[in-house]
Image 1 (tube, rainbow, N blue to C red):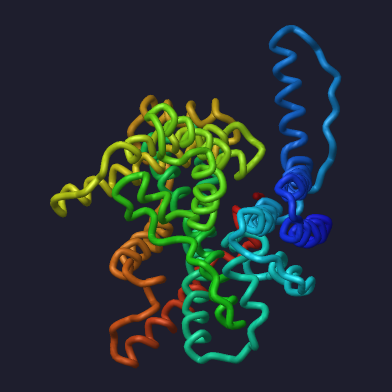
Image 2 (cartoon, rainbow, N blue to C red):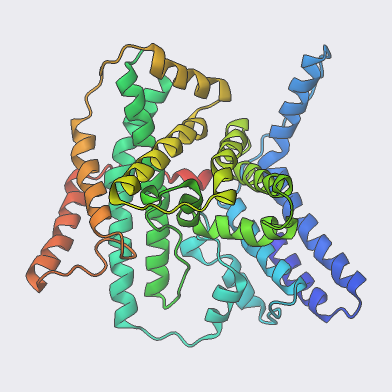
Length: 411
């Protein structure tokens, strides 16, 4: 509420101020309030603990206490959403709203409040001023998005989560094949968990007559890391592009300058995900992956090369996910070491998970030109609705209804 009220008032002050100095003053004040609240709730203990560990390295024994802070759900998402409002007003790209209720609705719009997509005020805010009328087409699209998103969450992500937890907790004693499967399963767990939420959020928005931005475009079918980040969590990657990367200079300047900008953006993006060095390293690692995309234009000349590129990109993405999932950077490196050191055997049983996962991957591949694979099935009426009913039955009989929260709720 503090963030919402301050951004509403400061947005008006930024717009009405005549002098550039006052505009800048109110803009900086907005940044400090938003980032200060986010920093305290999400990063205070992290930086205190890191500083304490640094002092211990140099031989000091500090008596530093942390705080028992309850992290507000979705704070990273709605903080960035309101920041975009202040930034766009300061840049002269939009006018502030004088309707306080509409602004509060923009900040707290429940479908995408806690895990995105991170909406821009220029897209979402004007929609609150429109008269709401039920649209059959919006309802049809919305229900399909909700159905597919719910299927991804409870049938794929939640069924994989149990095996992922076991493998990452017991990586020292499992076979190398188990560890490879653990990385594979987590890649699809986090994808189906997060994109499933996004699909349902966008679908709910459609039911209310709202257009929310697409957040995922089949990222695991990307041919390089640059393309992956244009398909994964699009609302966040485009936010960092527009509000951090381009202001830093973007791709203009020397190679060293561009590399610096890229590393800063990805490292900060990693920190946005959580108060842990694993997330920071994950972001840094992705910046290293991304570097060739700055200087080389990738274009597959044949289908074989394209498929090889997709598999290679997916492999390196899974490698990075190990750092994202592990509790510490040391655990992540140990996990990777054990992939090569442990026996090349399979100690677990994963038939059920693969029975769900492999058809899902195939279905996504065949429907990758649609928003979601079931959006425009080119089938006769009876077969089309039989597919929808089949999905519902799979959800009912094979869904994992174990109160598994969405992974990105913690961010």
